[in-house]
Image (cartoon, rainbow, N blue to C red; front, side, top):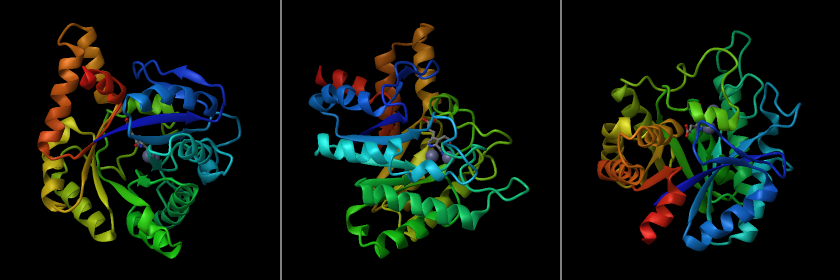
Length: 301
Ligand SMILES: NCc1[nH]cc(CCC(=O)O)c1CC(=O)O
Ligand SMILES: [Zn+2]
Ligand SMILES: [Zn+2]
């Protein structure tokens, strides 16, 4: 039930700790297998890949490098499929890591998202990941209509039967993605994501987005962040009664647990269990969590 997020950079020997995301690293392809080997041995079943282009000149207005066959994510999919045949590989699909402006799509001249161009591009990227061997593609961009576009292309390419489509359906804007953006170098260069992510008070909007994405062909519905949105997880469970529900315990939530423990407010492990159990109790079947390696140890004991 746990998915472990991994940041993969385009510097092969990279292994850089991310200060705002305690204990988590950005890694190049050469460091990936040695890092994962012991975790897979301990029972790691599933990962979620995020690409981090660091080489100069790899970002542009269209996010061209997102599906570069020589890029870190495309390469990592092949490598992990080959080295860990039992590992379930999901891949985050978005453009913000690859665009020069850091937004989750292609922009018009006025700086707003061009929905049609963005959806065309993002669905092409999703298909490239699926064809490279990803078991699951997870669009996190929030452009309207991308679930339908990806599903139709998967069907057209004849790979819909072997590719899960996990929608970040209810993704709220807020201040909990900061450490992730440090890790992925994906902060927008101007403005914010409030025009395409949901406002924290928007329960009705979240329910509509969930219903819409189920209708467009999502196989898994995700709610993100998790612990402040337990009502939304429970809504997703009700609206998507026949679908697995995922919740992303995001970077800022993880960092908060670490900060609280460090300040002596509570014990790290006890809180990691308490918050994750809360997320499961609300109705999640799947939790994307930076605590996954810790749980592999803790649950063993
Ligand atoms: N669209 C990119 C993306 N995919 C997952 C996360 C956040 C994950 C986390 O904070 O751990 C983000 C950041 C964002 O939307 O700015
Ligand atoms: Zn994005
Ligand atoms: Zn994303």
